[in-house]
Picture 1 (spheres, helix red, strand yellow):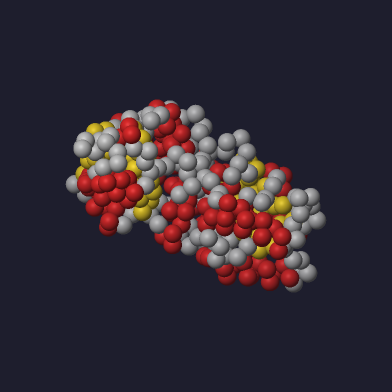
Picture 2: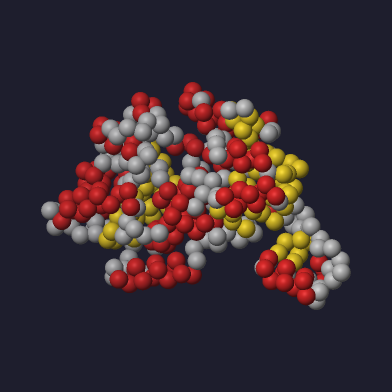
Length: 368
């Protein structure tokens, strides 16, 4: 019996191994469970999930450069969301969740190309143990982060040096493509809703009496606990809803970390005898995305909702308080509003009432 060809991919590894043992197939060409590939590629981009999502445009460029390649992607899987974000991606052959088993696995597997796109540990440490003929991006070098290729230096400096970040005018995608030595052509973010997610959205639509005639506006005000400086104020949000309530069916969007604020805003609106639709903050990331997909337009802070709305090709008004708007690719579907206090609070993680009130409801409506 012929030795199993190393240049094969298994669509069903368990079954392929059983088939090989039974000697029903003598070579890869005869085995219906395998196909030849030109390059075996590993991408290490663990998190944050918003950055994972806006890194997906490189997949199209990789497939254009290496059309017969297979692609593995290693991602963190907090609460199952990292896996859910990538599992339906048509370009990815295998999602490897960052855990001990898969760390051991990438030590033992041989890859043709590594794209290491974390600029700090543990991603750079992982890059050091990967066996690959070509490596792009970042690795761990005696306590510091270093670049495998010259093109990756710009993003590394932008990530770590504030004065460079302030001068930069390239989008995150441009910087990542350069790090990978891939041509940037404004490739889109790739995210696929499953049939289950779409069914969830239809049930949400039905239970909230939304019809095809309704003009639906999603509003996301949050920022998560890590970046309270990115958040818009409750008062400005309520003012906006009052001004738009007769024109749109409004869905207020938030995650678990926004639970208390969702209650506060709902109470403020009820005191004015206004009711709106609010998603369940315990929705999974994909359920959250499916609700965003119902909307005709999205108003959002610089958050996960922004990247999901962009991947779903929604019209967006994006509010920036402490982060640079130029790093976000608009794809011709986004209007940006940046706070006049932006530079004073550049990448601050402290909440400021003055900052969160520095963009008015009227300004948002003008962009909308």
